[in-house]
Image 1 (cartoon, rainbow, N blue to C red):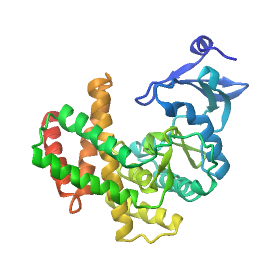
Image 2: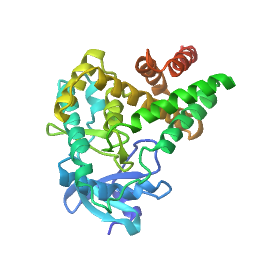
Image 3: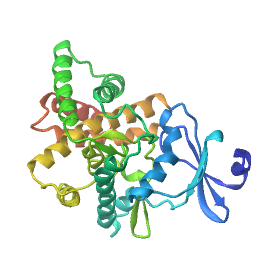
Image 4: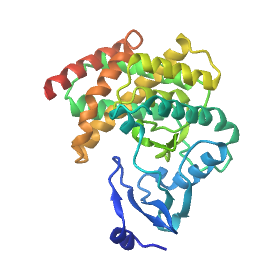
Length: 318
């Protein structure tokens, strides 16, 4: 077994994401591989290998697990390179649309096949997208982005109205059919290899609504997607899951996007302001623009707050 010291000497460390896991690129028995050393400060970190094996079994594209050594908090997976959907979007690659369609095919497989094949002992976060989790996401947003990040103070009446609106939003999402959800399905967590989109960083998988994943991808602050392309991709996903690409589908997408963007904004301000990772702050502006878009006409209190936040963030970066 390779020790951490040996891997540090003979491999290249990959700097990725905002978490505590450490990734090293090296060979494993002659195969290009990525070694992941993790801690269990976050419970979900221990679930990656088990989830990967399950996803591979039901046809969701993920890297193969070459070794799982939980006693040492280490797993090894095949190395699929560095090209992700964010890279394709940034470089305006001709593969951009095929890659996004491939990713949506993978999500459709996860959302339609995941629950029906889920074994009782499946290793994942058991709390799921329940009321408490949705509450945590919006509190995380208010604490780190609104109050802590942009120093916006809400009156008692504003807080009450906003909480009622966001509580109703959570109830609407909870009423949707339960599905397995990647939970962090953004462009940097989807690799592009040999004409296929391949998912990574799915250790936070839980039961919720698949619209959260689709919203995470189509309203991703990391990768700008035009409204026209977004509409065509929404239609493509709806075809894959055999539902009409109608107003109801768009409303589901926008509601899930509002919820997801609150979580993302909370993370950007937390990581940049409290964890010494200032580069995450650059994503706040596109996230706020997206939040303004998805709340227009449906979530008036959150929309007004998003507009105020956007104006303030623009003034800070100008």
